[in-house]
Image (cartoon, rainbow, N blue to C red; front, side, top):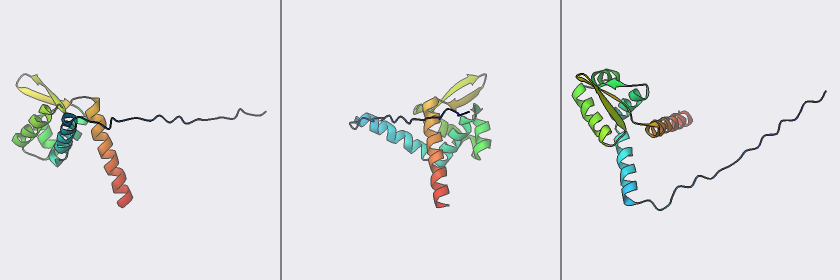
Length: 119
């Protein structure tokens, strides 16, 4: 008995990014990338990708002092990379949305590939 041949097709779709970005869009993107360019802030974001944490928990996870972590979180919150919620006297932080998660995961994946190629 003859089996059916499996035929697979690849569909390519072009994703177009507007070549005319406003000054505000470029400045916003540069600002976000600069914030993520700090090792401590990137460690904080990575910890928050795993779930919600308080300042003290994040300080333990990233090996930094709570006041410094709090300052980093304030900057990340202003850039809308993280959001917070209050429970009693504690404030808990989490990555703001799927876009931030995707951005950070893409950067880390690319860094891993570059490291593997040059390692």
